[in-house]
Amino acid sequence: MNFLSDELDHYVTEHSENEPELLVQLNKETHQKILQPRMLSGHFQGRVLSMLSKIIQPTNILEIGTYTGYATLCLAEGMVENGRIDTIDVNEELVDFQKKYFDKSPWGKQIYQHTGSGIDIIPTLNIKYDLVFIDADKDNYINYFHLILPIMNKGGIILSDNVLWSGKVIEEVKPGDFTTKILLEYNQLLKTDPRVETLLLPIRDGLTVSRVK
Image 1 (cartoon, one colour):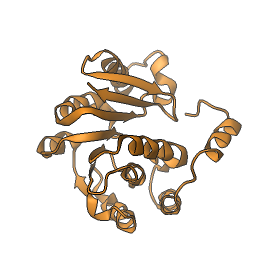
Image 2 (image 1 turned 30 degrees about the horizontal axis):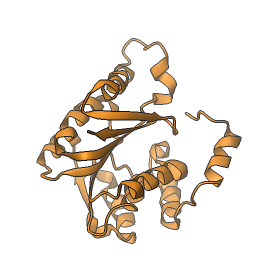
Image 3 (image 1 turned 90 degrees about the horizontal axis):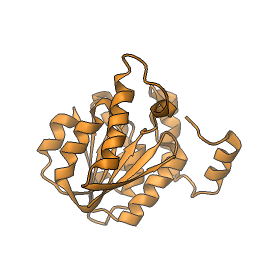
């Protein structure tokens, strides 16, 4: 869902940092070959992720929901020289596609791919994280939050995507719409949990920035 007119959206993109050529290629191939290319972060949100990562300068990054790896590479841009990214996705059919682009980047050896459920994989990661990006199955956002908080460094940042859910968060919840209900609960959790301070940005489908106290 776009909250700006197409003309303003185009102006914002044109006056933001250019999309790196490798990501142009990744964007194009995703749209040509992969189902649901709308899931891609894309140029503008990718530059937002890159800028936030460069400001944070994380050593360890956790991404829940890799898709084709676009956001992974954006987050890697701000990582310190010896940093590490753990990225989790349930779709094993995308692993080779992701790896092809990871290996073309400067960070191929620093990106660790995990295939399976984040609920199962996160407890096995014996690492403290400075930056986490949640962009997987929305029904588990609350579960992910409770799993990652204990493995976050103080001052670490949690980014949560799609928290406006195409505007459904301000509409009457339809019977059986479990996902919108969960996202409403998640947004309220981020607002009220004393362990984090939160800012919800109206970028694309909503991006929450939560800082661990």
